[in-house]
Each structure stands twice: as C-alpha cells, then as structure tokens.
Length: 305
Image (tube, rainbow, N blue to C red):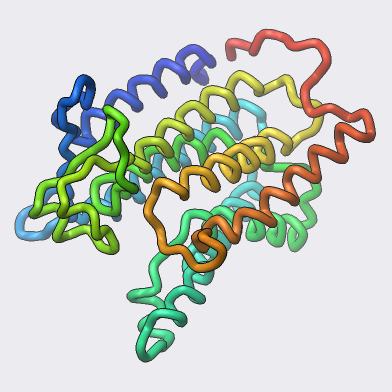
C-alpha cells in the first residue's frame, strides 16, 4: 500500500527538519546573533576510512530520488522493464552531462589540460547533470520506442533528491556573497581556509547561505509538484514547470553565490540558463497562445492513494 499525499508531505517536512539539524548551524541568526557554519569535508569515519561529506550526501540524494521515483512509478502503474532502461539511460546521461558541462571551465583554467585531469579535477555540474539526464531519457526512449512522457515520474524524485544532495554542498563549498541580512552565515578562520574562491570568508563578514536557499526551493517545489499532480493537462508538464522554476530561481541566486564572472558580469551557470529558460518559457508561451493551458480548468483534490 502506497503512502497518501498527506503522508508524503509529512515525511518531506520530517526530512527538512533533519536537513536543518544536520547542517549544524549553531545560531539562529536573528537580532544580530551570528550563524556559524562548520566546513566538514569528512562527515564521519568507518574505522580508519573517512567518508567524504559531499559524496555521502550525493549518494543519499540519489537514494532518496530513487525511492520517490519507485513510489511514484508504482502508484501510476508504470514500473516495468522499459522504465528500467529509461532510468539507466537517464543516470548515464546525467553522469556524462555533469562532467562534460564543466569541461570548458577546466580547459580555460588548467595549465596543462588532459583527459585524466578533466576526470579528476574537472568537477561536476548540477545543471549539466539535469540537462544530460533529460537528453539521456529522450535518447533511450527513442531507442526502445517508448512514446509516453516520463517527466512527471521524475519531477518529485529530482526535487527531493536535489534538496538532500545540496546539503553536502552547503557543508563543504563556498557559502555566498556578503550580506547584511540577519540570517547571514559566518565561518571560522579554520573553515575559511578550506573554502575555495572565497576571499571574503576570512574577513568575518556575514554571507548569504546560498545553498540553504536552494534546499528551501527544492523542498517547496516538491510540495508544489505533489499538489499539482492530477491537475496537469499534458503529461510531462509538471517536470517542465519544475525545470522552468528552477532555471529562474538559479539564475537569480547566482548573484549571491559568489561564482566567477566570465561575461557581462554573469557566471557560467547564468550563461547556460539564459537559453534554457527561453526554451522552456517559449514552450509554455506557445501553449497559452494556442489555448492549451497546462492546468486543468477544474482543480480537484488529490487522490489519497
């Protein structure tokens, strides 16, 4: 028996509480109090082996996404062999996209670029991973002759998986740009020394918790996706709406993340997001112009199944 929508939302709230607790923000940051973030490259040890924080939460995010996907696919009666091939193609495309999307930045900054260096030091990109996963799903469906849309199966899984995975980024990567907002986060001198490309970290100024902004976005998106389930006219529009919302959110949050500006004051992710956002907005714009709204005209309550 599958969990009802209320049960899924309850579990999501519990997960959000666990994320806030695990992030180890030691003060609320209201009324002038300082919020101190600890940088934890190693989350815990298994004997003498340290478990990297970032890798742990990436794995946990994938596990979370996989669990949500299975629940959703079973609920819709679409868990079969063909779906297994689509998932495999999606994962392969995501892995390739995450790597290839950072290749140009690696080549631009590396003194002696090489294939081995790209694999080890090239990094990975969430945006590239999402794009690669999308292409991977489309290519796999074309190969096996699967014509039905699968985006709405992936939408809630991706949203919740991203929320969990981004916690690893929050605990290990750059915080954000300086801010005077009361929820700004400080880091200790020891932590500042471990954060790359953050010249203001060591100065003691408060910074935007940009990764927490993103975690909050994905958690809210997860709830919205559940609420829209069953109200969309066209299969796949739920995932496209999520991608459009994330593209717009991510473009603006880049201004407070502190990334490298490469053209006209914009970061590489922002340059990638401009055409992506226009394509998605164009899709929904055409739907509206042709009189085909995404939402059903008569909203109904979700089935408690």
